Length: 262
Length: 319
Image 1 (spheres, rainbow over the protein chains, first blue to last red):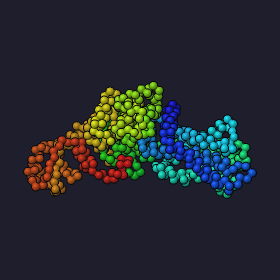
Image 2 (cartoon, rainbow over the protein chains, first blue to last red):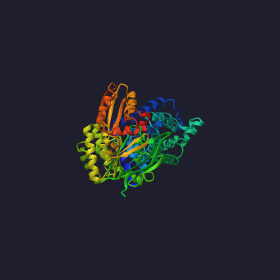
Image 3 (cartoon, rainbow over the protein chains, first blue to last red):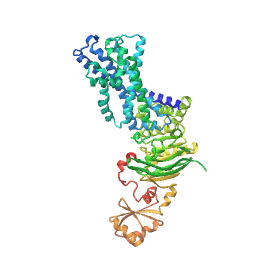
Image 4 (cartoon, rainbow over the protein chains, first blue to last red):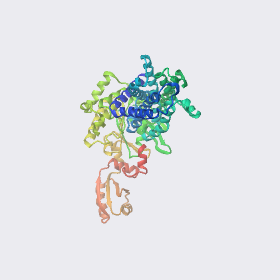
């Protein structure tokens, strides 16, 4: 069972990697759009955005949020393929194999996470220009946090994609749920300036904790961090959310139902 | 008593309020080739999905080599090789990569997996194509790769859903030759679903399924014997009137199927003469044939195999 779990996870992870580098348009798509967002929104809002005593420009403030958006896009693109896998029949033949369903789910999520991590690292090339100065340990911490964020978002994407029967449906969810989650993560503006109800929404948003962890890892001594949940809590929440998504996805995938066979 | 390779007891399944299977039981002895024959929407695909462990039946259970698929799907899956009708291959991977992936899913690895892959690639004439992307292969080659994938882990029972879809007659013949060889050399039990009558004739036993029920099981010969003798297909401008008159004057029943009158008769060749002499003006053409499985189907269901069953389109999705 244990061997089956890891072999299956490895195989599905490997497949995800191969499919990704054989479709270069996906690499471009997942990095280019957040980059454009970052430049257009960041540069445009920069002047109107009061950074107060933090000393941070808006492009810098928006940098971790853009990174999170890249992770989110990559996670979405990789989990959306689940819907195609089901429609084409690939998934069906995986589901009748003697492997624990959790292994299938884990492999797929791990694949998306790895891709998100790679895309995130690509974007981090810009970090030194954004006032990010870290030692080796600092970089490793950033890496770990990117991994946790990617894992959480791919898990969320998997859970949604499992329930969807069309790519169009997934796009609707993306616009109605995933993008608002990103906006409410503190990516565009800090929580403390927002009205009370929005502050609550931000506080309840698991992605907000992921971003908080990322922001604090990138800008350790920046005063903007004072308004964020503590580093430990942030890491804990985003990690717990990731594993919760893995659990719920595995549970959903373990049912034998007609829904799998569309 | 020899244990059956596949046995099912009173399988029932409904999609919401629509009943797809209304109590199906079957026994497939080890080392035999068994066909599930039925039109779209008959429930044969639902039965296939249940036996492949993809779908849990609403009621009833089935056993593969004596293992319950309701209670122990994990062990059942190890014994099963499943080839679905929809492609299970990843088009963005090469043929070999697809096989290796399949091997991992079934717990194979290393040299054992490599040699299994080589063996199947060569059996199915795919050695030269092993490095090609599946998406670039022709339909026939894709089906062969699917088959290689399904047989990779040396299953004891293979389930094939409409295996010859998209194959030309030559390739279909090759497929059946290969399946028959496998049955002989490895004692494999094979279950196929098909809507092709000529395909069912390759099998040891056939089960005809219609509207969620098994209506007849037997060897092709037994099934053909159900039809009372040979079959005459009569064309007429007024088939309804002719039917009534044949019944009245000659006491022979006939069926009106798709505008033709079908008559089953023990001495059909002699009956032709009688028919033409009795109704000279009413008959345009008479065709004589040995009973086919299609006639068996009509004999049992009263409608033609290809005739539109109500809701064929809708039911076909789950069929």
